[in-house]
Length: 345
Image (tube, rainbow, N blue to C red; front, side, top):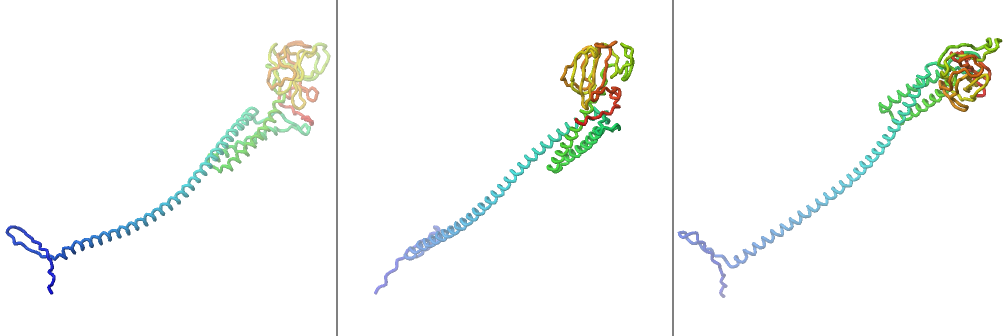
């Protein structure tokens, strides 16, 4: 039995004209197997690359998921932190607004205190350290000191010191509540002081010690004297003050005009009522510049000097009535008189 001849492929390799030719015999099977093997190798490489690419893609996806989770966590944490910070900022803004309002309130209180202090200073400068009006509340004849004024001065000094303390606390950033309370207490104290000061002022201004004429020359005093018309001894219930016709006549204290008009003896006259059942009477006026019911203040012009009524010449008859009794005007004008306060006032 004959063996089947194997077919071969011959490959000639010619390297040059002067070189020998080499022949290679390759079997047909080898020629077919070589591409198949190459294809198998190529397929294996492609499959390997695909597997590696899939693995790498999976790893990248896992890393991406991890990064996404980390990013989400970070965003969540930062969102909470951001919300916390926003809440803190809002709270701080509210506190700042409240502090600004409190600071504005404190500034307003300081301005009020300055105004109150200015009133106190004006009162002290106007009335000085001593007040001429002495109220004898026990109806005794013992000379009393100026209690109301001294208390007002003392309270004014204390209030001024407290105000300094309050201002220092304000400038040194003391606690707001403490500072506000201090200012409020100080305001109450100063208002109480002003109330007392106004009371003292009322007492002082109602005390008839303001000289009622421009001239201070007394032609006839208080007490018994020879009547210029009859020559007989007669009680003179006031003082006569000389001057020129038309000179101003002024109220000796704050009060209310309770009567004015003409009388055959008094001539043109004005009667002013003051506190503590005191009245001042102005007679023989040339003209009257006030009417009944008018409120007048010390030093206010109420008429002019003349010689009307039962008079021998131009002058003012000035007298003071206490509890409807005539008293000497000179102790009042010299600030020496103790006023007995009416127990019913």
